[in-house]
Image (cartoon, rainbow, N blue to C red; front, side):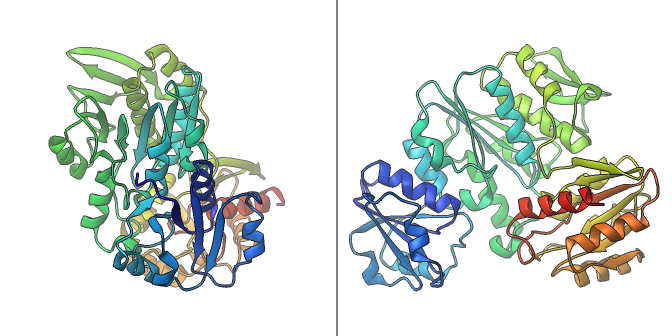
Length: 450
């Protein structure tokens, strides 16, 4: 890192505040910048100590604001096409992601997990396995705790498990995990990345700085990742839920096993897990592979995976009301994730979907309804687009709702005893909700009030 005396932090959300505090703790000055001129400057200032060397800048960023600034740390929610980024480029100021900043200051070993779907569950499970064996474990990143918030607490003996998004990977320089994992790559965030080629390249960047002694866990069933594994400097470790691998983690009937060097090791029977669905078996295999690569013994891994429960907002059981079971999958923010949730439902399902449009296509998702989804209740910006797609595929049992409370009441009125009601929107939450967590919490509140 350039030993900057003054660092610009772009974005005043959770990650921007955490990055600012890390920079201040390491003896540097901060300009906290947000393009939203309507923000409350005093409220932002109250997040810091009076002694902190911090300046708050709102609205348009001008070149003259960048005097003495030698680095910008950008929050993941900000697009690199934002107007102020061109001002930074013109001033030749390097731009780092907050995970790059955290990595620069962190100690110990790092496991970093990315992919379109399954990141949160896999990261949480990997963290639970690590905590069952290591004394000092930090679980950070997209899972809710900014890496920058914990980086200075790490030690040479600590282990960090990080959930990493494509937005965070756009602006890394020498970010290097000891073990990386790419769970899958399916269309998502194309409103930001524009093309699948760009999205794939950004995701694969998680392994770009790894060395030969490092390892990268990859989904063998994803043809893009299978080919990517052949190009890697670190050792590729594969998992598969559809094929019996000669080398790697896979499923043999109801067993998750590991084949390595001609030896077969049984890891766990899927019926001993507290997670639903084949996609979760893939998450388990990935977490087991990452943990084994990080040196956790098999018996510790086996115990931890059997004790682990589904993370909040990811096919989370909420309640049973009048013989109908309600599940919260608010984290299902793209069609592929929503497909997995539908597959995980054991019986007839009434689906709540819709939200912010990320330029996704919904055809394969609608096709997955066959024989499973009885009705769909749509919310938000995408509801007409989804309804039109459903009609093209002959699915006409579609209703609209203005808010979550109405959607839940409609589902309850149409559900039969033994049915499942699933919130799995296939869309982002923005526009109606602050984030997917808030959407899931409101859904759960509405269910409990039935």
